[in-house]
Image (cartoon, rainbow, N blue to C red; front, top):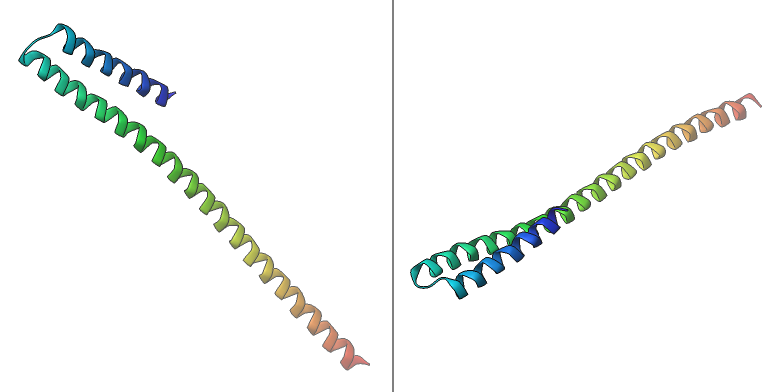
Length: 98
């Protein structure tokens, strides 16, 4: 939605620049074209920054998921090591009892 609004604003900016070029003359047209060019640049940069932020946020979420998965795997390994320790101790006790 935000991208659509920015594209519409960019279109209106271009229309304003064309209008000022055709219907205005002299310094007023140059000032209007300057400010419309600045607005057009701001809109383009806003779209670029918006897309970059979207990519950064998705990458951050992916890293967070990987971090959760790795911590989950490390806790599973710890649980399995504890179980192996208990089983080794039980095997030692069983062998000593024979």
